[in-house]
Image (cartoon, rainbow, N blue to C red; front, side, top):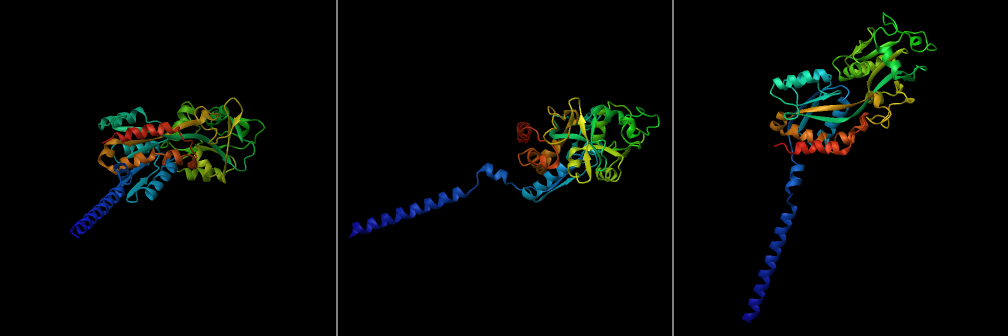
Length: 333
């Protein structure tokens, strides 16, 4: 009898031990590992972004996705003052990111240096995507749907056709209407103006009759309401307003090329009007404010620019470019 009681006690002890071990294992399996925990870490605070109006739709979309799906307690505020105006805020540290539709200028690099910031060490440059500078005309314009690069340049360069710059369509091609061309474009605050002036016009003076605007929406309306209008801006703004405008196919020497996501690229048929767009991040801010670093990582992750560029009229870069930037950010402590 004593042996039976002892055996029963032993069996009971073993069963209790087994249940306890099983429960402990279950608890451990439910605990997130360190990498999962870091991926789901919650941040809070504000991220300030300003700069290029061309880049604005893409960055605003990235910010919206980030705040909705990733970090609901972080407020990402995206402005569109223009590339040059954006750097004027970025240099003194008023913003965390500065979007630009052209590369940072030497004088801006010098301005950062005066503040103790070195590009490459304290400020990182990210190429976000590729944009195609697009010439747009009114929907009722039936004659200028295709133009050569030289014709576009000559139209916009002051004094090429007439001293008073009142250029007629017939001055470009004799068979076109004898109506004055109304020139439009973004103003000097925008990197798009600088790209057009420096790279396309080769820094020759623009026609004095050109009406330059701060807001791209204003340019869209001006061209949409004027049969003799022509303007230039980023492909994304054209894509979002195709119901109001039509794009000019540009002949770079091998026949007219329509700007599309399939033709825009540095080695593709629309390369003559292709340019990279950028964002610059202040790493001092990123080290001081975790939400800034976290948003920077999101921009160059597979959820950011790589996924959303095409939706906003930009050609995405190769995945290794974005992963290279992400690796740089992962090293920041």
